[in-house]
Image 1 (cartoon, rainbow, N blue to C red):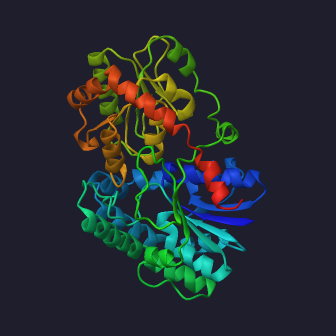
Image 2 (cartoon, rainbow, N blue to C red):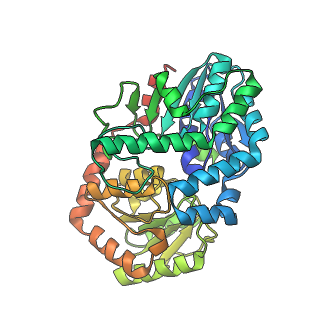
Image 3 (cartoon, rainbow, N blue to C red):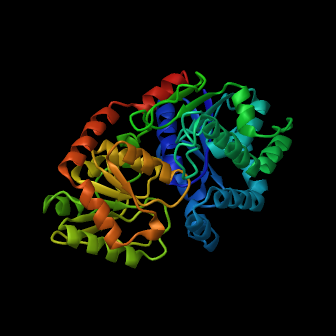
Length: 417
């Protein structure tokens, strides 16, 4: 099959679809994927034909504009940022979607790419498959996970998702219409998510039912697969097959550390963050492993250091050697930490991160501190509770269940590939 994957976002958005695309490519399918230009090499490591979008995820997040919407943290600020990117880069975006979708038989769409995907599907006569990193389909059982609220009650839960999906869908409407015009088809009308739902398009929810059971009122074409994990060969191609220099020696030289990592999130003052980590570790008498992610933190630390700052590494290989985690609450990191049996303090920035914090708390293995309020005192209080052996035991029990998922295999099977 010829498969187009239309995606965008940070590494956390792209990585699950690289895992899926790599598995499909290994089975002999021709896979093309749109991706921010600074993640092109990442996609290519999975044997995928990468089609660059006209911006880099890091340059957007680290720009003044990007810093502002991350710090605002609201869904409205996020939607405005998307509209601005669409408006600034529309002609190049349209060409990227047309190129990735050329001769496609299946189009797999990230939630922000559903509008352009509908245009490609109409033009190519292809099958639409949607993916989601959280339970973003309307349901009476859950509020919309991109807003930081608890259970609103049945009808309001469903209404929150309908309204906010419509808002997000309208944010990319102009680019969806431009893509349709470029491909010579009728543009999708109104709420693109509603249009996709009318098609009863297979929708793969790329998270674990261990953390969030599937709502009972979802239609049958919505399926929870489990998280999608990169295979070892792709990890090796990325240079993440072995621990970064010095990390193995540091891990072996002392007790299991606490992992601190904020993934792709921009950290305005990395030196202040590192000072907080040092203070927390000293107060709790623990070691700290800091994942530099996309921050300006520089690798540092030696065999006898209390803290070690490491560049990118394989979470699935290293996190099982830790005792707890402090992270930003991205879906991928949340699953990786819990898969390793780690209770976690979620220091969330925006969109679905508070939702995953609530899921960890509901399962008795988490705490939350909004990143803008992070200081040593709050982290010490939250971590001290999570370092209780009973909490660790709960996390280990959940990890056993989580490791039973094989999201990639489930997704490949559902695609008939």
